[in-house]
Amino acid sequence: MKVILASTSTVYGSKPLAYLKAELSELYRNTNEVLFVPYARPGGISHETYTKRMNDFFTSIGKKLVGIHEFDNPLEAINNAKGIFTGGGNTFMLLNELYKFQLLEPLRTVIKNDTPYLGTSAGSNICGLTINNTNDMPIIYPPSFKSLGIVPFNINPHYIDPDANSTHMGETRETRISEFHVYNSPPVVGLREGSWIDLSENSCVLKGTLGARVFEQSKQPYELPPLSDLSFLK
Image (cartoon, rainbow, N blue to C red; front, top):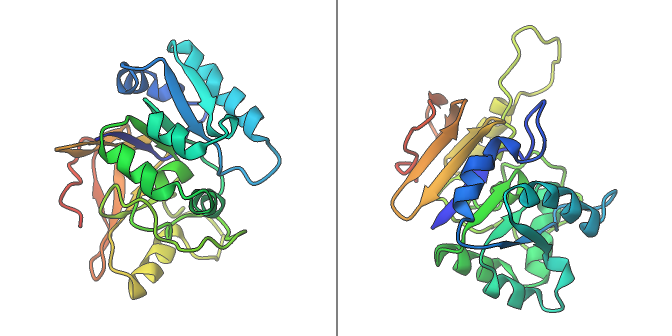
C-alpha cells in the first residue's frame, strides 16, 4: 500500500496541503491525474467548488485533480484511478455516500492493490476500523459505522490536548475516547494537526512534527513521538 492519512488538510498559517508538498509529490509521482472524493461536504460548498479549491495545490505539483462526481460511473472511476484523495468534512456524510454508491469495498480493494491514497480528516477517519472516533455530529445515519479497515485501529483526527488553563467544564477528547473504550476494544490514535500516518506494505509510521496520543482499552493513554512505528497496534 501507498497511503498517507493526515489529521488535517490545512495547518494554521498555511495553504491547503502545502505542509505535505514533498510527501504528496512522491506519493503521486507515477500519475498526472488524481481522483478526488468530495463526499464529506454536506452543504455550503459544492463538490465542484471543493474540487477546484483543492486542485490549486495539485496544480502546484504538476497534477490534475478530477472530482468523482464528474463521472457517470463512480465505481469505474475508482477502479481506473491512478491516485485517490478523499477530503475532509463530515465523516457520517462521507461514509453514507460511499455505502450509497457501493464504493466502500472497491475503494478498499484498490488501496490494498497499491493505488496511492491520501486521506485528510474524514478521509483519514474512514481508513480506521470504524468511524466511531470521529469528532463530527451524526447529521446522517449510514448503514454501518464500519469503514475501510486499512489500519487495524481507529483514528481521531484533529486531536486536541486538554487545556489546563481552560474554564470549560465539558468533556475533553481524552474523556470521550475513554468512554468509547468502555464498550469497544480497538486502539485509537489521537492524531494532532500537522501529523500524519505513512502506510506502506511493510510499515505504519507516524510522521510530522508532533507526537500522537494513543489509547488502548484498559490502559492509560500514552505518547508516541514522530517516526514511531504504529504497526504493533491491533
